[in-house]
Length: 488
Image 1 (cartoon, helix red, strand yellow):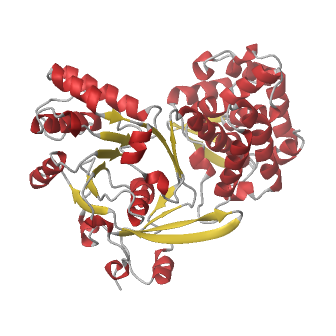
Image 2 (cartoon, one colour):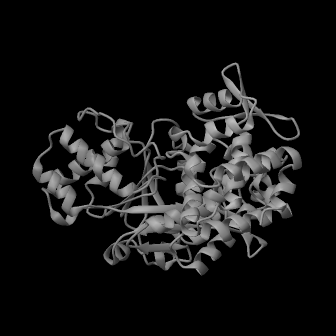
Image 3 (cartoon, one colour):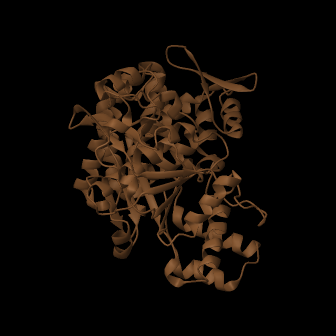
């Protein structure tokens, strides 16, 4: 049986109100699923046209299945395994504007009366400025693509104020909508486009900031046969994800009326300020990863789930997040505790093997962004050192006890097994040189006082040096597990 034989409702028949840049796993496993839900209950009534954002790859597999695919969502729900699937039919067409024949169809979408919303996920590097020649029809730079798109639309409709668009980027950078608009305006300046066009862009188009959260694990090549057996059909572009989902959109009531995805069962929050939700995600979800992953790896664990099934790390999560991190976040405490519980379920997801070593990538910058802010806020609020976050800093320093071999850097865990560590080269060279010292006090002083790494001199935090030193010694003498079991 083919996927087309299992379709219940074909949402690709709706008007093409949305143009989406990118067809990757995350968009299909999150955004396009939500749009499909909105069409199921007829609150949105819009199909998607997808434009390739990069030159690599082709659309053959998608065309073969008429752009329909299955999303399989798997995870824990209140501690119990849950699995559900949905055939997503919201995509009506896909175009590759890098090809001349497709560029014409792409322009038809841009000039369409129906078009009102632009969605994108071009990775964090996508929303970045680079010089571009105006003569390029479809530049590699995403903001340049958008500038060209807007100018084409502006000329086609003779500057009609009602033909502006709503931009909803989901790239994982701060103020993604505002940053996209800033670069678009920069291109307008570079290309010396008319002031009337600039005014039209600023006054008649909206660029919304967003925050998204869902782990999309892509095509399950290791157990696809088992999944297709359950479904009863084959699907070459099937995508898997966790159950959890969150989309926070910073916009007005009018924006929500135009894009009413909040009416679905998906977890959608419209707000006038996305920043608190960003802080919540970074400090609780990402902060928990960073505060625990290195210590867990040093003690012999390899994946997040196994770490969380250990009672010592399970308790350590509660200590760090509930007692040290949540008190520093200015949001409703019950909401924060509920979010932290959902994170714990996500970490224990039996369908996802999340490598601790993968999480260790660029850990110094991650600790600074995700954990150090919580540590400093806790210290300033309560005038004492948070012990869990301080232990995490000690475990990071121990993890970065490294040596260079053939231009790569390696450390050894507490079982004397070697691992490769990946970070900025200057940071790695700094830690390698520091650890050549024999005196642990001197080693720690040099690390904590390094403003280039931390942004401040951490030796100025009263009591931090002594606490980190205690945990460094305890890790070597007692091991990770016994050390965290004694943190209160």
